[in-house]
Image (cartoon, rainbow, N blue to C red; front, side):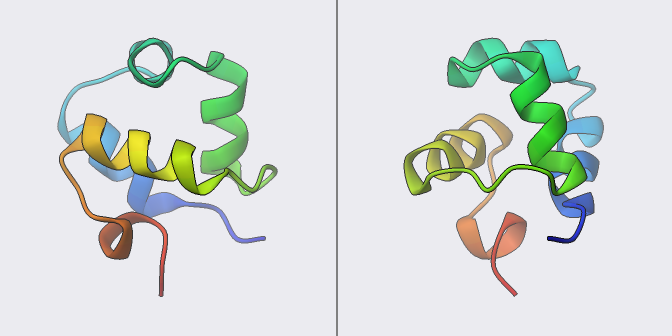
Length: 64
């Protein structure tokens, strides 16, 4: 699985740490890190929560 650089850059653009995003979407910081590094395939519900927290769409962050 490829790194999710779009998610990482969207988070950085909001000056949000992995820890802050994790708290918003109710997961650990390690989970956020794993998603960004392509080591974890998030559920659709987690994808939606991340999108809402970052004000992005699924297309913008997760789908080609």
